[in-house]
Amino acid sequence: MRKGLLTGLFAAVLMTGTGHAADKDPNEASIEYRQAVLTVTYANFVPLAAMAKDRIDFDAEAVELRANRVRMMSTMIEEAFRRDTRGSGYETRALEPIWENYEDFTEKARNLTRAAAALGASASEGEDAFKKAFARTGGACKGCHDEYRSD
Amino acid sequence: MRKGLLTGLFAAVLMTGTGHAADKDPNEASIEYRQAVLTVTYANFVPLAAMAKDRIDFDAEAVELRANRVRMMSTMIEEAFRRDTRGSGYETRALEPIWENYEDFTEKARNLTRAAAALGASASEGEDAFKKAFARTGGACKGCHDEYRSD
Image (cartoon, rainbow over all chains, first blue to last red; front, side, top):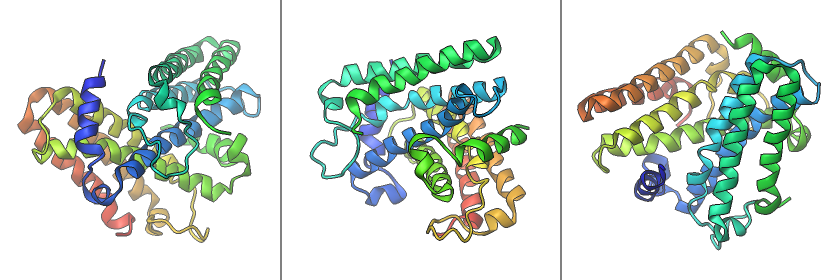
């Protein structure tokens, strides 16, 4: 839906950049962005995992906050990986099939968006609903990592 | 408002972590998180700057999308910097006054949240309103960087 918009903006701007980014190799800038997106996603997933594993108490407000962040971050994945960095020489965990099967990759990102939205909605339904929704969210992460991220 | 919640979660979980994070020094994990938050913020700010400088066409939909992301990311700054990493040995651009004046630092983060919200709202008011709101948002970034980030 926003693909045209984002492609245009990214092609025109982000990968050229301003300020510090102007001096940066476009592959490096793109890799930094996508890694940052996933670092923020992961950091907000961790407290959810801790609740799901009973390492900390269930907290509906925290579930809503964290799940909403995971959902929002997941909507950045498509643009963050749009630049094909194969052969750029940077060592990353992103696997080449991302750009061979880009539609499938982005569909998996949308799976995460949907799962995280359901996870946020589960907060008001109590701990059991949260745990089920959390398992589906973790499955959405894994579904992508299995194919598209190296161990 | 959410401070108690986030402090508790972060103290208990994020800085201990699960998976990869479990093997990570808590200072390093915290620094990675805050740098990722600001990398994502910056990447979404860049297209806004390009529009404000007439390097690309004004696009109300893009302004809303990017400004909303900047606003949302800005709400993570407080927790991302909560861990005092002074003396940790990691070289970062974060300056010590952050933790000497933490209340002022977090107030400056809230200034960015407010400015980015106004920036998003400006999208429907046209290009002049956007440019004024953009200048205030850039000012909110600079207001914090001047004191709390090294060049």
